[in-house]
Amino acid sequence: MEAGWARMNDLIIIQASQGLCAYVLDNVKDSRSRGVVVGHDHRHHSDKWAKLTAAVFIDNGVPVYFHSGLVHTPLVPFTVKAKKAACGVMITASHNPKQDNGYKIIEPHDKGISASILAHQEPRPLNLEGLLASHLLREFDDSEYLQYISSLCHYRSLNEQTSLKFVNTSMHGVSDSPMSKAFPLFGLPKYIHVEAQQQPDPEFPTVKFPNPEEKGALDLAIATANEAGADYILAQDPDSDRFAAAEKGPDGKWIQFTGDQLGTLFASACLDKYRASGKPLAKLAMVASTVSSKMIEAMARSEGFRFAECLTGFKYIGNTALSLVQEGYEVPFGYEEAIGFMFGSELRDKDGVAASVMFAELAVTLQKAGKTASTHLKELYERYGYFQTSNSYFICTEQATINAIFARLRNYDGQATPGGTPHYPSTIAGLEVTRVCDLTVGYDSGNPPSYKPTLPLSSGHMIQFRAENKADGTKITLTTRHVPRSPHHRRAIKYYLEGSGQDTTAVGELLHKVVKELSDVWMEADKNGLGRP
Picture 1: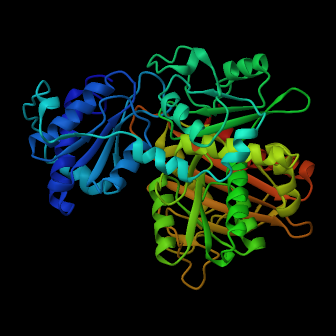
Picture 2: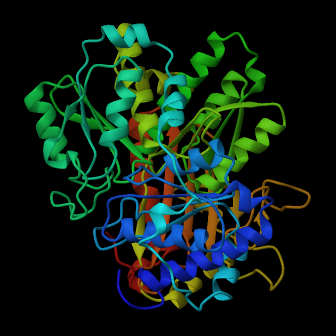
Picture 3: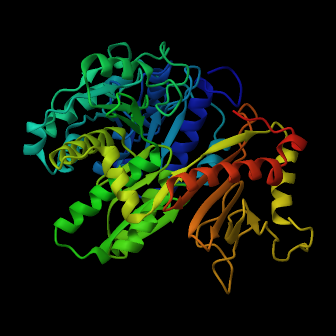
């Protein structure tokens, strides 16, 4: 939020909106009658920038569905679909630090929009004072969205009888308002607030990074839950499109679930509901990003439903779900490991509110069966195999070094020829590499005869390795990834690592060995001056 071309400021908002408006008018049928949706969160300048965005469209004769108050991000894509709008804009920086803000476009036409923005740089004068009086300004509320939330509930009578106690933290964001409406729709008991984090506050005074996944982010929630004698903690990130949860263990310690563990729990619940409906499992499908756990893949293989993976991001997850629906499948669930979860057919995007009430209802049904979320997860491991993740990253300030590291992985033995088949590492931590999918150069060793990936290519470096100990069936999936970002973002090589097998101790030890070989041998971390978080 500073002056400059690579910063958020009034001029950038106006230019982005002018370009987006021109693109929508040129490329989206009936956009002048369908209108657009604009919403904003509580961050610094969000309200003004949402009004500037709305003013640009109204100045061009395009109606705007505008929420005069704070909204959580999922409400914007939901309203785009409900109103059949041409596109949507949400002013938010999600779970970024307090100094950040962002302009999120709900419509996947990235390159065309970018070109249109560059072609419409001269700012036109806008009348913000007359905005609210414009006949083109149409307010929208959350009534239809809450009907969608209500439709997700399956066990209201059971929810009404539960003795479970839930603590909820909004992480100084905007989720408390929709959460306080969603809980009664499910018949759930009123949750306990983390009072210091309940109200929207753009300063985020109690957390350095307002992300439920960050170490220490749930400390206040845990303290509140201990004092209240609560069973579970629910958390949404500041714009409430992501969800995290924790359970109080029998020893009094708190178990914080990873995104992949939550995805597994949700997938199991969706499978049980679908099976109970009597519909054929062959028509059920679920979606996850390619860097997420392969446990749902194992579930699908065992139970007979369809599993599909796609690139990271909910524009890919949502569109994959829509493609599966066109093929005749029902897709009640999709997720990515970064605590993003999608439910039902009305909103093909992640939603922290929906995830929160779905998790709470799952906890209630498990309690009725004498279980908890963590004990049920252990049962799923016993049924489908144990899966454990170890995700992190290496810090690197030089793009040339990053490029050299990935080039070396593609010519690991030095025998690859320009334009020929890449030569990747053949082993890691004593395991045989059984498949390599490189979404940068477009190579998949597991897809002969073309050896072309089924997934679209990545904008940066992205290589996924699968390796296996064929003697005991222990497996790992390792994805190394770097996405080029603007100069003020810290450069990093991310890795997403998952091990699976029947012996939990052996899997944990294996992951440690893989990370060490990845660092010392594949990445040559010391030689290349790579940092660790």
